Image (tube, rainbow, N blue to C red; front, top):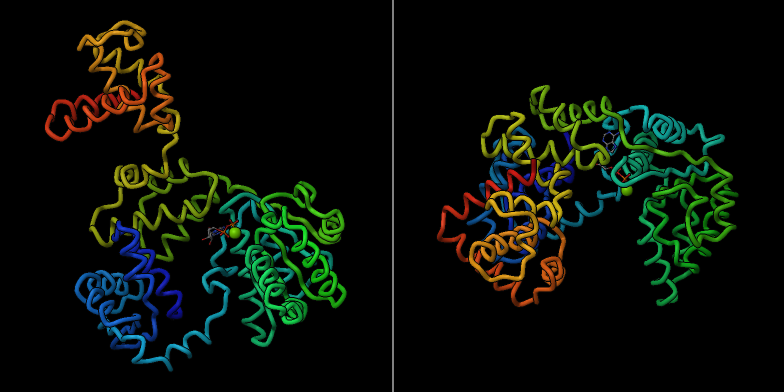
Length: 434
Ligand code: ADP
Ligand code: MG
């Protein structure tokens, strides 16, 4: 059975998209602490009695459904208030490590793009450290660097609970360091970082512009290295390409092994999708895998997000998983076309749609047969490109800001009451996107 922290994380993943108002989510859901899960009940704790009322009235069903979906058990939801149960809460807190238990080697799909990174990480985790310590993993966002780090930590802890493993983001390292200076606790900071068996620092590029932190890290590094401790670092690029990094530090990184991790190829993307679907006990048709893998290429977190979205549509809204559903529900992730929409493209299509001649929309005239299509074009440019109102004005030959606003407003208010206009906009969008 998965542990409660892991279950709760998945529950949150399911609930989050169902609560569109971010502040509601933050106030009522994120303040919940899962306490215990047994055969009869899932116990959660909230800060105040009005949180309890709110959760009971508005979110209990949603939470119960999500728990049922994740665990397969149909249990009661029991809500405690902070003061009821501090003891259990402490126990819970004590058990937490900062390693994500679901980032393991088992859940990591191996492909050409990450083979070497995986093999070296596993070697380190199994104590075959020669030649790969310190390990420097580098590559783009969402490709599995953090996952591999945690996998190393989880693997080591599985065989030896007493190993002292410290995983931090480089921001956290920086903040703790600065804080230790402010509060005169630098000794304690050093003690903490220089006595670990394994130190993992994630996304080290963030200390590029922080000289003092680099200096401190340099000494931490040396101390650990001299004592044969393991050091793992990740970054978004090769150490030699880290700008404004101390040369001494780069030399240190070069003493170990640098391994890159690349975007997954098509087959690996499909394999990852299948693994995620399996984890969520979902059955997804082959052509849907193909559709997603063809369209989401550079980021594994997005592949994962796509499966989660489909899962929610399927399990909570009871929709059948088809390519069309994928197209619909993933359109915000798969928006290559949307990004290519330019003001010129919109202008051209609007002119064509209203049977105008080329560049009619640029004409300085208020006649309705031109002004109205121009307002529509402005509306579309505002909503489907990144142009500011000022730039839209400039695009149409130096119209001022207020003309643009009033044009867009007109279309917006008309849209509420005029189904023909709605249809016009829909048709235009279809033309533009094709
Ligand atoms: P990075 O640290 O490189 O930005 P992460 O390690 O955070 O990326 O990975 C992003 C998400 O993709 C995580 O949820 C992770 O579990 C998942 N992921 C990355 N690589 C793989 C893989 N090879 N197999 C399975 N899941 C992966
Ligand atoms: Mg990361």
